[in-house]
Length: 169
Image 1 (tube, rainbow, N blue to C red):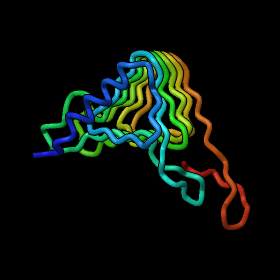
Image 2: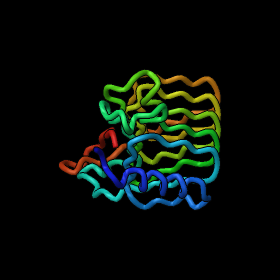
Image 3: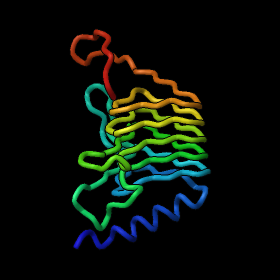
Image 4: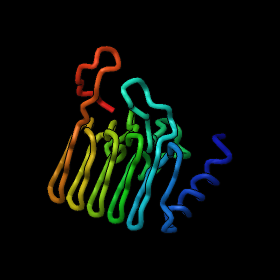
């Protein structure tokens, strides 16, 4: 069972990450995880923005609970050990619903994360090195034991009456 093209897509994704050409101009949905050790990975959401300017997911990793053929120790984890992980026009979403404690993790030990949206859904965000810039964090736990974290929540104008709003992208 399962998606017969899953292995092909996963192998192609790994080859792209192994190369130093890190530009992906589409929303990325990955049943599994992402590990970046060097180079640059740029993900851009192709979803149309809502009335508040929220573009949707640039990166989406999923645990896919109950599908043992795709669950691995890296499922629904994003790890940045080096290089640059960047999003444009979208957020990073880590879908960890029903995942065990070893999944649904967003970990930065080195390198740079520049997220032009929010970081959402992670069970745990662990930053022990490197730098992380994001427009907001929605996670069950956050540990900053080294490195740097900058959170800048955007302020937008209401599409209804021109008042200023703090809006979660």
